Image (cartoon, one colour):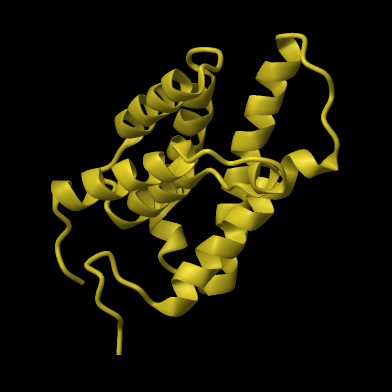
Amino acid sequence: MRPVSGSQIFASLTGALLLYLLPWAGFGLMLRPDFVLLVLIYWLMRAPHMCNIGTAWLMGLLVDLANGDLFGQHALAYVLVAFLAVHYQKRTTLFNQWQQGGYVFLLLLISQIVLLMLELFGGADVPGWDYFLPSVVGVLSWQLVVYSKIKVTGEQEA
């Protein structure tokens, strides 16, 4: 496995933030996964010494600023997920692809539950079941990346 550079992490997080900020509408907006969180989870599992809880906090604040949401809600959700991802990072390297996908699904679901709780405390209405569709789409896109065997460098594994 090649060493990871800080520019790779920065470029992928910037790309994820740009994907998150695309003008999604309608059904696409309802299905849009949290690209920033997916990339954060990847780097937290791949290179926890370079992408850490502080990175998750900063990216959460940037997502909050970009969306105009309650300042700090994504930061809180991302930090909680980052803590769990880093805490169990050594174990997840032993997981097969399906177990890792289930673990990523749980992390995405935890993030959405934290965001939902914060929104409900703020007086929002209770959403329907479709509120959790981005977690399903997120884990499907995670599996797509895993099965395509695309490395961070852009090369494919043999």
